[in-house]
Each structure stands twice: as C-alpha cells, then as structure tokens.
Image 1 (cartoon, each protein chain N blue to C red):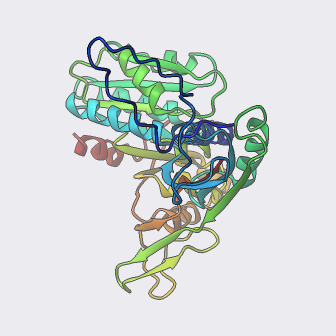
Image 2 (image 1 turned 180 degrees about the vertical axis):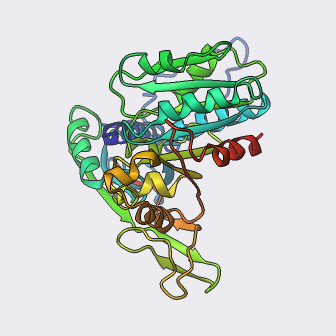
Length: 256
Length: 114
C-alpha cells in the first residue's frame, strides 16, 4: 500500500505544562482524501517538457560563460574520421603562432596520437580519451578546461571525436561549430548526415588539392552544402598545401 | 550510437520525477524526437528495451513521436516542411532559409505514473 501524501493529519497542540499526553493513534491513519484527490494507486499523467540533454546543455552554458569571462572564443571541429581535422589544426596553429595565443582540446576513443601531433612550443594541449564514447560532451570539456593553463588564450580549438552523427547533438559551449568534409568522401555527405551540417556555423571542404585526381565534383559538393546549410560560411582548402587558408585565417581573426 | 545514453538520461529524469510525485512506478513515457536531432528513433526505442527491466519503469510503454523539420521563409512569411533531404529552399519562392522552427527536439513530454 503506497503512502498517501494528501491531507496530512493535524497534530494536536503541545500539551499544557504538567499534563502528560500519550497519543496512541496510528500516525498512518489519515482521513480519506477529499473528493478531488486522486485515488492512491490509480495511474496519473504528468506533463513535463524537459530536454533529454538538459544536463549537458546546462554544463555547456556554464562552459560558454566561463570561456567568455576569460575572453576565449571556442570552435568545435566535427567530421568523419580521416577528413583532416588534425592536419587542418596543425597548419592553422602554425599560421597563428606568435600572433594569436591558442589552446587545443582533442577527443579520441583511444591514444594521444593527435595531441602529440598538435604539440607546439607554448601551446596548451590536452587529449580527452573517451574510452569508447562516440562524441565529446560538455562535462568532458569542463574537465579539459580545468587541465589547461588558459591565461592569455584567445582561441580554443576543440577537435571532436571523428563521427558525423553523434557530436551533432551535444553542445559543448562552443561559439562556432565547424564541420569538415573532405574530397576523399562523397559529394553527398551533407545529404546523408544532415544534422551535423545544418548545425554548422562554418563548413570546410578539405583536400581540394586531390579533388581533380579523385574525380570529386566540388561544385556538386558545394551545392549540397548550400542546400542543407544555407547560412554557413564555406571554405575550400587544402590543409596539406595551404591553398584557401587566407580566407579561413581571416575568418578566425575576425572572431577575436 | 549515443541513443543508449539518451535513453538513460530520459529514464533518470522519469524516475526522479516519479519519486518527487510520490509514485511507485512509471507505466508510460512519451518523448518527442526531431528529424534533425541526430537521434535515430528505432535505435532509441531499442535502447529502452535494454535499460527499463529491473527499474521502477520496467514494462513501461515508450512512445516516441517524431517531429518533422520545419523552417520559416521570411520572404513568403510562412512555414514550410523541409524536403526529404532537408533542403532549406522554400518550395514557393526558392530562397534558402536558415531559420529552423522545429526539428531539433529531444524532449521528455509526458509520464504516466502510479
């Protein structure tokens, strides 16, 4: 029998000094519920509108506020594995070295290979090893921020786990989400994985140096990006040769 | 495959709420999942079958309502559903719209408790 919450019994006033009162009434013996109360045990419907990722969203908001206080602009890089996130970041960090102080958080299921590749003189880098989780979440970013010396940092690059699906759902507290597509993938990736493209502030088409050799149709890829992400800024680059980097670096500098 | 984590957070929210309401069991959960939420409805449904047994929500019915993606065209001043491939062009004037009105939902909207 479930405990009834409604209509608690009124307790007697404290006894007058010198009078001993022994109350032997069963404390569970509450009066029956008034006509309007639901019968105990009957199913009830509770309406609530709560976001399933509420906890993550709150942590993301806290991250965003913390980063803003420190004057740091954060970019979250998402793509399938092998699209060139790390190579893009390597060249970007080298190009900004000495002018803009940067920091990097990089997520992978295992290994710290990417963090090693991104290691630079005076650059705070932390590898977040998710141990199987297919995306970074806001709590992981908070722990990563705790681990980095962030004084003077203006740009924080977050390299998400290589995955075109799951990272789309998780706000990390970033200011810009940057989705990469490379010419070694299909031109129709934006149509196959819409959420990660529709949620992007910027889309980078990478590896344009090999597009012709692969028969990759750049115009078709750009049209597909435009269809699903009409407001995103689009950059065509080669992280290997540096082609197209002027526009990309100008975009980053304009964020400061 | 992050649907398992999403289902776990829905279950935690449902059990917390049921406890706060003084209920013993959750017999039904209703969710809304947007077409652009990045969550697969079938995988989510399957995740619930894996995590409900042994909890106060064991045997609960799980209803997942898909929410279609809808954008707003500022030119035509009207909403339009995104096409099959989520193309953002307004079907009337052809202009692209970046104003998504719905489609990213990932909500727990209703519980039945006893």
